[in-house]
Image 1 (cartoon, rainbow, N blue to C red):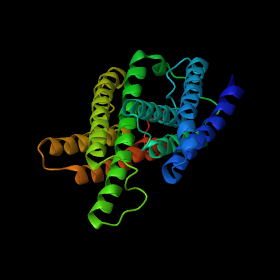
Image 2 (spheres, one colour):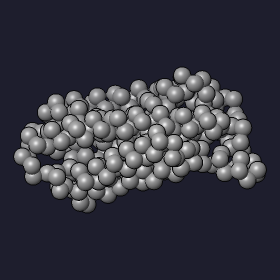
Image 3 (cartoon, rainbow, N blue to C red):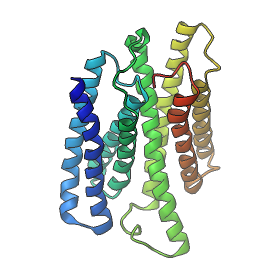
Length: 274
């Protein structure tokens, strides 16, 4: 099984790259064959990815998020699933290139950080681990999707403001639609991360009896949660609108990357497994 997992870990980034190329060919060149081919390619890749995650769970007998590589792969899968639903629901492939690009980048990160053996600790077999980590990764996936739509919003907004239109104009949904999609993704991500923070706090108190509040990963996650909470509150109070929300979504995405990669690799002790 280890050799199968190693091969799949190499194949999946290539599969997402092919999917991204198909959506990109459709977006930038308007190629009809690429438009027809991209969705089935994405579905096949998602099926392969799901099988890979199931094999990971079976191999280590735990939720597949015990390493940075596994967590990045789970985020890539979640982002691709979210986009697949958006495409099916909206009957539009206009944002496919950008969302599948993010899935590819996270899956590439997974391949580059893969280790031959996952840590096998007792806490990984606790049901609270699966709840806590899955909610956290869903939150991250929501923020990744929100940042993608935020980037597209800003690009289209600047073109409209300057009156100089590139190939983006006419190919993307209207600003109002991009703003709704961005806001929906950010709200979903914040709700999921809130669940991760609450479940993580309960679980950490049981495991470490109060000796956990100063862990850098926990501090980074709480700061990320507070940032998005503040952004959504300002939106609720109508202090911030589309452009400010889009900029905030990109800033939050940078915080997510820092929390997920840099903190996990170099600073934390309690979260070395994610």
